[in-house]
Structure formats: C-alpha cells, structure tokens
Image 1 (cartoon, one colour):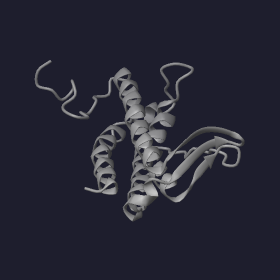
Image 2 (cartoon, one colour; image 1 turned 135 degrees about the horizontal axis):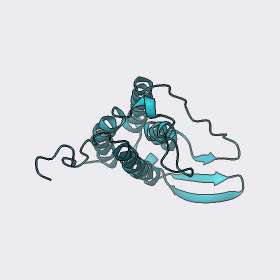
Image 3 (cartoon, one colour; image 1 turned 180 degrees about the vertical axis):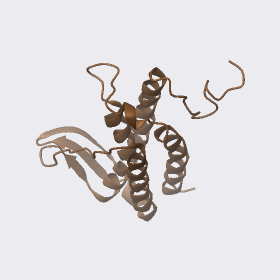
Length: 166
C-alpha cells in the first residue's frame, strides 16, 4: 500500500472519532475553560476542527511563516457550525492528499517565524504531525467534556461511558 493511501486511511479512521467527539461539544459551554491558561471549549473544539486543513497546507505549500501569515481562528457560533467547519477542512485535506504523489511527501516543508526556523520536515512527516495534533487536542477536549459531565465517546474501543463493565 502506498504512503498516500495509508495516510488517507488513517485520516478517515481518525475522522470517525473526531466527529463523534466534536458533535458532543455543547455550544452553551463554549465560553467555559477549566483554567485561565487553558483555551475555552469553543477555541479548543475549533482548533480540533481546523487541524485536518493542515494536511492541505502541507501538500500545497512549502512552509508556514508566522511572520507573514497572521493567524485568525475561525469563529463558530454553535455545534452545527463547528461540525460544518470540521467537515469542510476534512474534505480539503482528503482531496489534496488524494492528489499528492509519493514524491511530494518527501519534499521539505518548513515551519518558521521570519528568520527563526522552528522545524524542517518532509511533507509526509508534517501530515503525520497534524494527525498527532488532532489526537492530542482531541484528548484535551475529552478532558474538558468530562469536567462538564458530557458523556465521552469511545476512541479505539468503548469509553467508560459506553462500557458495560466499570
């Protein structure tokens, strides 16, 4: 199986879990945050929903330079808009990855802030890092939801909320 096909398969598998988690985010708690240094529930959920767009960014660009690309997160007003944003970013990531060649995945991609280079990795490595970020922030989101007493969906098996035996 090609690397592109493996990455597409992983994207689809993780999207199932991400979708289940995002659809449980209650918009009436969007402003809630567990600690003053934490993101709000809305910001964290939006970040999880935007991460599939990093796949497209990795495939079609050669770098992200924070000095020349001001970050302005999407503002979603409710759970339906959050889900639409996720699905849109997932579709863009999927489509760009499906069009990528194996050789594209080995090209360098740079993360920088002007002259300060944070990382140079292959585009394939950046895509894997994006997947890792999705899993990482999705786990944070699970903690937020648990603290709000929202039942957590299973990720790689049933959650404590779904399990028959505790």
